[in-house]
Image 1 (cartoon, rainbow, N blue to C red):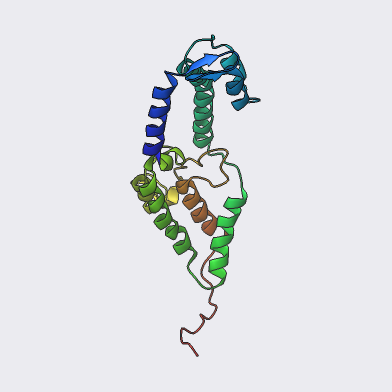
Image 2 (image 1 turned 120 degrees about the vertical axis):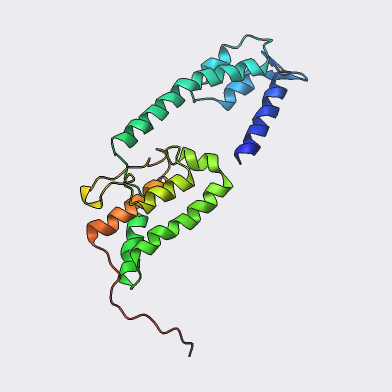
Length: 210
């Protein structure tokens, strides 16, 4: 996915160098400023488009947008890093779903820790599909790093379980109701411990077909 996007971006930038921004009706290899402004209307980018001199290529407008957005990207990255370092998070419906899942499987006689670990089969697929996206939503942690931390109970190597201190992974992107994979696993582990969830003694259904 990331490779496809980068290929698209490269082609777009190559094409944009031959497109001129024009005030008025555009002809071949020209694009009307009003069209550009309509595409970004209400987003705050209109002033960037307005500042591109007539006759300049579209590439100049795109470079302007990139410069305009860079401080926002840097600010968001800093905010997410501070949130992670402060062990803060937002509670979402998806986190509630994870909490419910470990409670539910415990009550029907299954081991809730298996549910938490089973998440990693899904996370491996996500990692294989798009490692870049996985790292973005997990504080730059790879799948192997996430799995290793989970194996050590989210404690640094050599740390005793009795010290109670855990490594808090990034909760992921702020706009996504699904927290990062590493954070979700830690949350489920802590949910199991906080409530003392264990598989109940309920009788399992017969495997025989009547």
